[in-house]
Length: 273
DNA sequence: TCTTTATGGTGAG
DNA sequence: TCACCCTAAAGAT
Image (cartoon, rainbow, N blue to C red):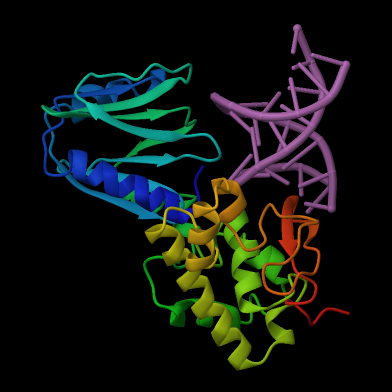
């Protein structure tokens, strides 16, 4: 289940498994991609990259495989031709002498040449990647005229604003920054925006380094030791509607924004109304 | 065996 | 803002 950090973790595994190796075989489930199987067979993989939630596998013949996992796609790395037992649909496989990289369930897979990559309708609209840039780029976006009047709840999910933030990071970032979701950049001081930009980058990096845990690391470690499940210790507020805030005990509010669930603490995230 | 939900994204109005 | 697309798993019946 993929936001920027999860995609980057998958890309790291993929990179270790296939980069610099020759693809001995490439399989596409979609008929319109079949012609590329022979074009990519025997090619070396030059790089595995992420752009927000999208992933690119760059081959040395100038072709790239683009994939977006949406909500469902899942990468699995196995020994060569060692397929897992699963009911999921295999959509893409890249084999080398030692490993097989298998992409299940994803529906958004393309093969792009250099020109198509440069003008890609989704990639070309992405804002700065939250994991590939310092917080200055995020601050620039927050201060830009284009975004100043939009609520944080809408802004943080917009990949043209900053790429890689998804629905759990939205709630978590706003909680850590202490900002109410309905606020807009124009409602905030420069210092507050600077904090938000720093927090956005920091929370995304913590999630990447600690396998999706955005909660306080020491606190989550204790909860885990006490036998709490991953869902129970993972986040500050996301998925914790009506439970007590970990900081102040106030009941966490669950609401809807941009057609997605959002969670916040009305006490720790003031400034609305 | 349904219906709903999900850490995502698009396009119409 | 809403309907819709995508796929899999969980929940309801």
